Image 1: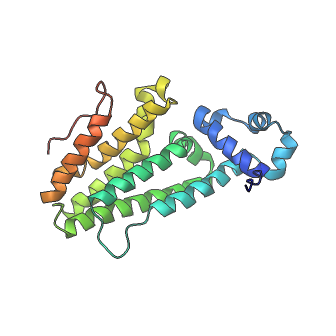
Image 2 (image 1 turned 45 degrees about the horizontal axis):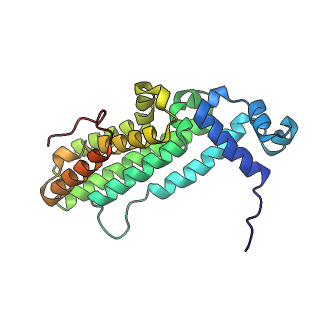
Image 3 (image 1 turned 60 degrees about the horizontal axis):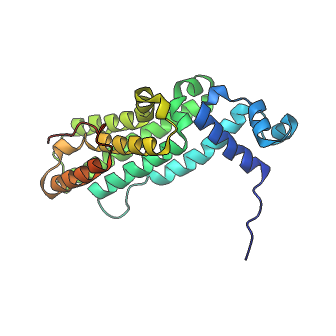
Length: 231
């Protein structure tokens, strides 16, 4: 049986840093802490990365590559509700995997020009994709909304998705790192974003939305489901 090659020190530093940033917040983690957790000297760490910002930027490169793959609408056909559902799932999973970017967003952007410029572009791309998904639904007669309303919906969807984990953290900070609690939080986020489109869906697509919503809500804890949209 072929054995996997050992991961390089640089890759392990990035993996560990991502975990520490996610668990404790990027401002609370120093290169000294990372080196100690890695059981390497600070000099060895600085051989691979000049400073903590260099580590953050390298993690952001990974994040940016992954999010670009998600921000691609189906080629050769119009998007449907299932595409929107899948897009939201993938987006929230990615946000959770790199959650420190979203939780510490204001602090990071205030002192990192590269992140400021690139994150702004990512938000614009997210809004563009959300708008395209809504326009595709309208083109096939599944959504009834004006251009202005679609623009507002697309922006609102991105705003809620971007700050959903911050909301969940404020809502229950003691359970923020519990796997099941966060799985439920991401499920609520997906539903909350999609519920913005629900009232404007028509025909079979609206029926499908109600079916998917009912199935989704049944999986959430009975003591804390989101408020169901009556559309």
